[in-house]
Image (tube, rainbow, N blue to C red; front, side, top):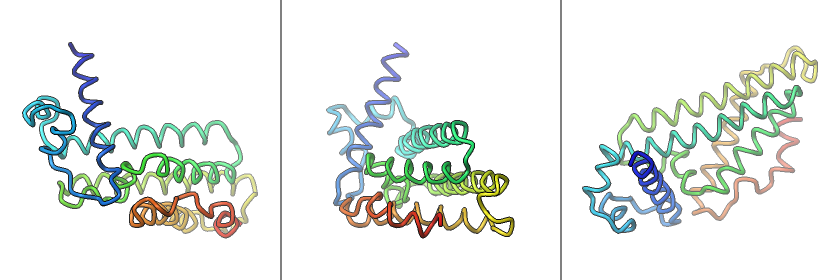
Length: 191
């Protein structure tokens, strides 16, 4: 029974993410979600206490996915500069492959939802910036970057670049791909 409960929760989250991929960005109601799943709204609330909790489930999936990949990148490579490059590429690729999740990452899907959801996304941004800072410090220690290099400022610029690419992807209704131009832009960001 517990396995079926978990599978139903995952099905609800997958459907919500799928609905968020609609380029017109309509507000998603629990009634529309229930209709898409061919269940009653009450059935949704057996698995989630609120719609905010459903979005929290999506954010948790995003965090788990992104930070397990970031940790893998940082543990697999001792080259801080390569870590930064791979992290940016992965973050852009994740958004491109998951347009619905990108609307959550940008906060667009959370506009009419509980404020704590946006706070959680803000914390995710801070963690991404911290990961960049850590990799830049590794590069600095290995003398790939000059000692005068301000890793905090550089990390902030890299995080702003990634979130800007996510925003552009969402605001253009998924037409401007996050990785578009990355090869040329890399030189400006990473020298």
